[in-house]
Image (cartoon, one colour):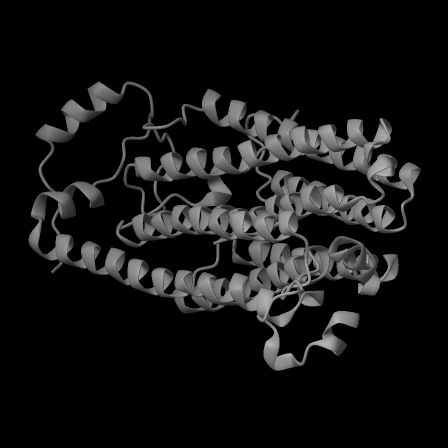
Length: 149
Length: 226
């Protein structure tokens, strides 16, 4: 009995009109993302790059919202169901900040305390990419590049 | 909705009705997708952590700059991957159209849109296969990164490790999605859903397919744009 009522309740989502509206929104968001991506090629300013990356991430989240809300119809579900899906996923927000911070701090610590890692990571790669072993031997003999503290 | 009128809101969990007003299979599909989102989230965060802990990283525009039939010297960043993204978005639309046709119990509409979705998925997999082959020919694979970092130092192997692991895991999801959609198509053609009286199974397959598209939104942004 429960099942029959459920099947008929599924109709409350918008029709094909909403589907195509969502498609156009997703397409435009993707094109804007790509436009920013093309703009970033060869961009010199570090702070501007960061700002553009921030905008791209916001556009990405907007795309994710439209897919989940309208294609997966999550918006049309009962609020409790939405909460059981969305609330646990906020754990990822913590993970993003914690782990990226950790990665950055690991880099800084190694640059400060691990001279070998610091010097080898700043060494320029040889022009030719073939012969990995040969390249490695060359590296050992090369004097370490001066590192700014 | 009718049941809501009988039981007051305070007794949502009092029994006798579905508090989420959704069938069991669909609810479990949602929870499966949530756990899968954690898997992909963990992968992408690991990638980000690795990138943040490196002094330099290869420029994606220098790595993903080719397309099928392009000359060796071709420099076309973001072109091929935007085609892949477009394919996946369109296949998501055809999938949601199949689900919609299922609500109307339109067997022909379901089958037709499923065929389009399967074609889209196969096209995406083909694109990915080409890209992997191309990168492999350039010397990129797990544990080997021929691309130099932005600052000119030797490329971090984690760049290719994460690229192949995460796009591979996503590609595997696309592949299973295509298989699921083929099964759905066969079941539709055989009239299984018609006999059942509803096309709710298409809806669950649709959720999975949209999730694959959703993950690509993140993978595409993290690997090709940022």
